[in-house]
Length: 215
Length: 419
Image (cartoon, rainbow over all chains, first blue to last red; front, side, top):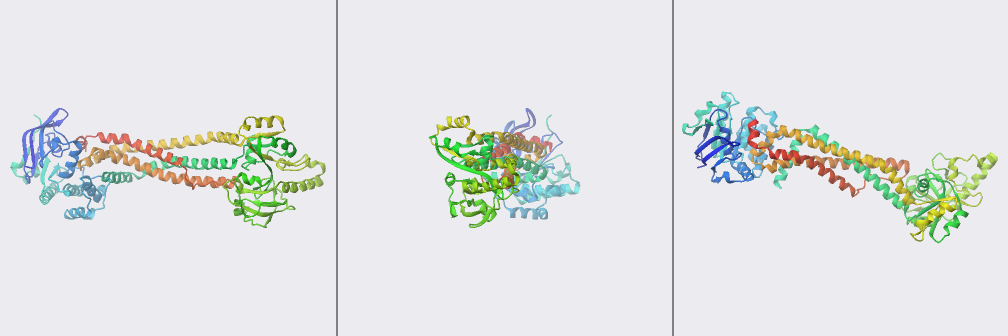
């Protein structure tokens, strides 16, 4: 099992947004967290990314008891094991595409390697944007760079929060296809949280977790 | 170490993203630092210079007038003398047992604004001055010149030159009594480098002659209509006169009563260089303090600028900083990137400020050197500068601490949910 969660309760402050007795995701089991806004998708994603701690519950990811880690240990865990793609927030504005990716390696404690960076951008067809700054990129290009960054350190899991909601049909399809391809390529498990039903067909029905939020 | 490099490269990127604000902060800081450093450079050198020029002179005895003027004219050679004193009267005082050494000076003439000093060979000992080439003056109208004069005027041994009356270049020249250079002194780093030294007799000879000329031309009126400058000339009407005696005490105890005795019992005045220079610096001190306070306020404004700049960007960059956390940066790391910005601004401001301070010091030094012939330069390093540098760096980093703490406190999921 890649992810094994038991007795989870999580939310903001003292108010629980989500509760699971048991949630398991196997390696390679690409999963969709589907639900309207406020249903707790992002809360669960934050838990999986070790950005937030649960109120109760045990979380094991890649054989690590994430809920028992200290904050800085969770930061290191996230840097090395998790790739995150968000809806709009893609890149550090002050850094070029190249420097954004090199920074990602350094923050994960990986030796910065511009060959790796070039190879990934080449594969995603945006190698010519290497020295461009984020504000000069289109939203779609920025997302591609964000996806490149998410897979750069070969994470065990790629978490994507509403990766397609801001895109039209064609681009949404392209984005989700790219996420799948990159996840497969790097041997990572993809977990997508969205309210966007268009991408449902991409996931096996048993891998779709419908969230309804607090009753 | 790796975290440091990362933090500083991020800080650099962030500062570069807002070039105008960054530039303003750096300029403000460098102006503050530069002003203080220029002041320190000039003052330290001036004080150092004065201390060396005072050398071992405990007391100066000269004509009554302003004691500060007496010191400025006879020790530092930058002012007009207060007048002359009769040697005969001075003799009774300098032969007292409290006096170990008394060096007579006769002033009043100059050569291209360098002062001509009639004195005795022991004046050289006061500054440990050595002859570099030639010899010490012996006969009347022989002169030994300071190293700086040789350098600036190109006078060589054997050359003849005429002194001018008074201390400015416009004074009438004593063309009929030219001096001959017989020696050039080695540089001493004191006022001596800028003096033309000759015997007392030379001065008397030059002015005896002139006195007769003046009398011949104007009859008896000459004495009453003397120009004020002329009172500074050593003349020999009723017995020999000199401008002043530089006194070294035989015992430090003499300082307690000797000056008072001179001032009370003779027509002359006694002034202590140490006291007068202290008085001078306390006079200048008010201006210097004002400038220093002004510069310190500039430095504070710079720190405030850094603080406000960082606080402003904090709002814009909140999501950026959250993204850093998403990528695996710890709270400490995020904090460090902000402190690094303060540090980098401080460092840039200090480097530019030190540069400006030295250039400014050199500029002011050149101006002073030109008008007062006191060589001051910006190309020296004074220990006090480290204090200014330290203070500027501490201020810059302090200014970044609160913004850094604010960023440290941010909860990532909340920031992301707003992004």
